[in-house]
Length: 159
Image (cartoon, rainbow, N blue to C red):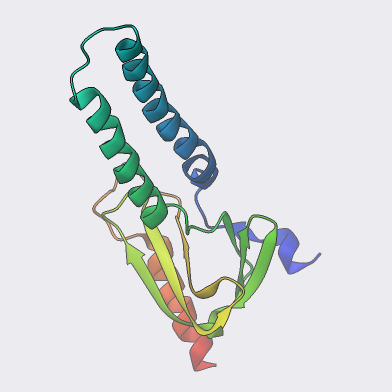
């Protein structure tokens, strides 16, 4: 049995929804609200300016948030023992734990994220971020996966 066959998924299963479904829903609702305002204006009704301004602001804010917090997340990350297998779309890369120089955890953003800084840039760049599975019952507790990765990376570098 290969190591890849027994790999443990360490990224959130919500990543697909956050990267593929949520943006379509968000921008779809913004476009529908703009279309409703335009339909009212074409029907000769007096439409207040905020009917057009608010959706445009929501479009810009949504774009900025999705681009900054969601777009760069890896689709899947699997723990293979001495390495992590990272997937973006159909591209995959295996990152040895010894090649990671820092494990950062951002807790108070949604979605929470773990960012791996690599010794040498790989296929996906010098930093790879993913969203770990999250517990809704312990939002203020340090993520156990991040702590475990920090310890394992340090141990891999010592060898």
